[in-house]
Image 1 (cartoon, rainbow over the protein chains, first blue to last red):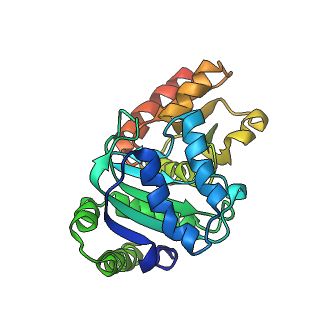
Image 2: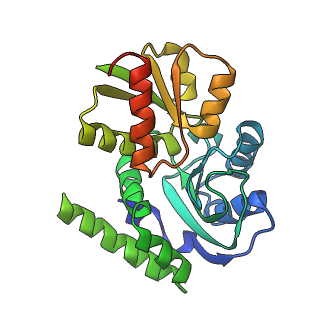
Length: 155
Length: 96
């Protein structure tokens, strides 16, 4: 499932951002370009951080940028952006952030399996190495596909 | 069974991932917890004693002095952190 919602053109490597807002915008841009999310959706992610703090920095060096569906999530998809250098999101526990996963989920159920697969990937130390070392989005997508197959076998 | 609400602002991302990890911890340690998953809008209608969320949302809820035991998780991938904090919350509500 997750290998279907993360498309090659939504993966950006070696991205240089000025600050966390810039990082969120750069990460979401491929989704905006493909009309997967609206521009308002991206604004909403940034506004909610201003209001509630960096609530989507979920683990060390990992941000899951997302907003409520009604803000403008048209289609189920996820982008991956690898920041270089890493950027502070003002989350003392998990800063600095190197990996931004931008989630667009039109409802709260259809992506459960994808999120399960993402949790599995994020619990795999090797995944971070692949994200940082890959020169091409296709290598990352291949790793994700292999991981999904591995998860199926382990079940 | 003790009811616990897993919530985040949007209800589609971080809390869903937290729920997945929580359920792993609950089944591994056989904890008497039943997890519900909603956005924060669902909080007023929730009648259990425990709310579990990411740490910065938790800080905000604690400031609002809501009538729940609030558990804030910093790293949703860290099962030890989840287990330690959930156990403490269960103790606080008298379930353990």
